[in-house]
Image 1 (cartoon, protein in one colour):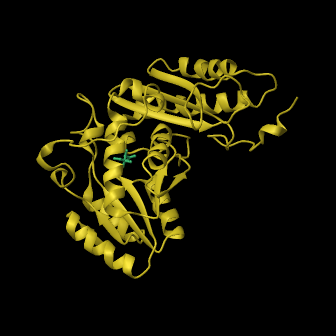
Image 2: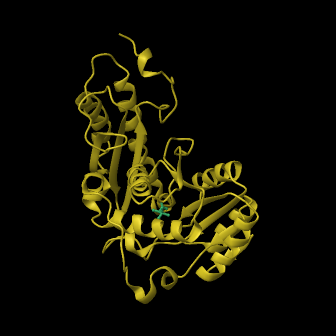
Length: 299
Ligand code: PAF
């Protein structure tokens, strides 16, 4: 496995691979890898000749007062996990390699319709930071495919749109959220939670499960689904809910009927930790259960 910190060295390494006609799958990460990242890497390995992982805690996607400085980092452990997972290239640059002079420079601003609500409402500039760094990674790697976890559902919608609008020619592959056995969505930020908060956090996946189940009942409206999920969240007073929304999976517009594919998404603060989670109403239940197709909903 090659560990590369320099853009020129990365280009040379990729050129050799390209000359050999090898396809490339890129897994962009901010490190502190968990099983969710490893599932992206495994899928990239199945679908490409070579797999590259980037490890970069991107300062431009953190707002003032957010957790950039304390974001968990353990590069030695990440490299060992990548090696074990069969990764070919790890790109782990210093900040100055991607942001010379410490300035963002040219940025990519995704459309307000995708970023003006959900996480974007409480994290202004976050998705500009994400789109900008991912476009830099795409320009450097020119991968055939890039892999992102669906836990960051709004991010995936923003990046799919960026790839289409800026003609990147990269196939964006979305990988389902992995959960702990008790239902908590895997996240590098879960390490911040105290034992008590770790229990309280389960209200998020329970709320999504309740909403998912409500959507299967006949005659329900988006408001019924939201109210069902909201009542579960209300049962955990430690949670400071930032949003609970049911949105169109592509446009992110609030869903007006359950006839369109929808995603129920939630964000909440628990002490100093901000957690997000979501479920597609068309997909499997977050905590397991029947994989009923919408057409099979009981009348
Ligand atoms: O999802 C993440 O870990 C980050 O937002 C990403 C895509 C690596 C960009 O910094």
